[in-house]
Image 1 (spheres, rainbow, N blue to C red):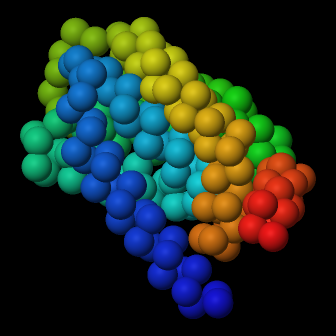
Image 2: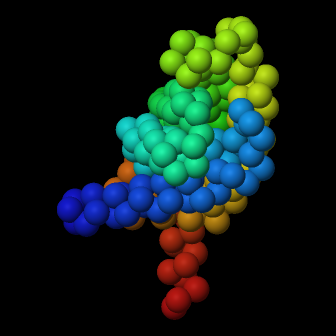
Image 3: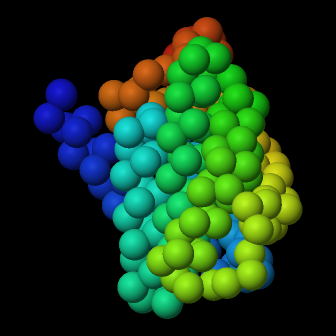
Length: 189
């Protein structure tokens, strides 16, 4: 069973990376990629912080290579993915904390970290430390809202816990999952 869940986690990671690369141009404005936040939060909640970091790194690298996106694809996303997963676990499964982790991690930390990368490595002169904060912050608010609604719907139907259990991830919504399973078993009889 352990081997099967590892394979399923890897497959889920591969699907999230593919979705992240494909949907990232949707609603994209230079410096803003709200769909990246949706994928970061979903991956952090479903797979955990380490997979979320790997997911954000792979998506960022692929976007840089395939689409010619500047290093913002990495500097912005990795901090948010990590903090999203950590806060989700620390809060014992509250999706709002995963969203807050993304907003703080990408919207503030990642935005500030982008300044030296874009100035000294990419050669963009004339920027300030806070240049990217409004753009990144708004993108994470938009993406976080979408992720919160999506994951909330999965949680209400019991699908979030079912997906997490199937992948061998930590399930925090156990009471709801158990009650849904009892109801499903009663309707089968």
